[in-house]
Image 1: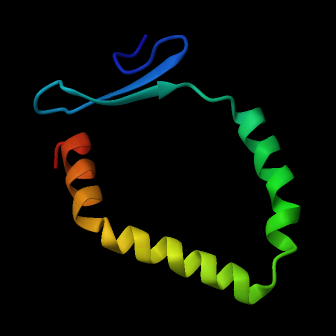
Image 2 (image 1 turned 180 degrees about the horizontal axis):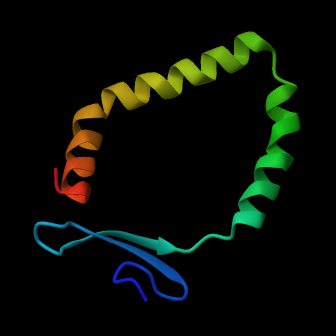
Length: 79
C-alpha cells in the first residue's frame, strides 16, 4: 500500500513533517457519479439566475477563505 492509502482510508501527510493533514474514507467512483446524476435534475431545474447566485456565493466563500486554503494546500504539497 501507498503510505497515504489503506483499504478503506485516504490519508494525506505534510511532506515536510510527515504530519497527517487529513484523512477520510475512500469513496467509490460509481457511487459519486450516481449521486451527481441524481443531483443534476434538481440543479438543471433551477433558474439560471439562481444557479448564478449559488455559484457566486460559493466563489465568494472561496475568496474569503483563500488565505487558509492557500496555507493548507502549501502544507499538503510541500511548496
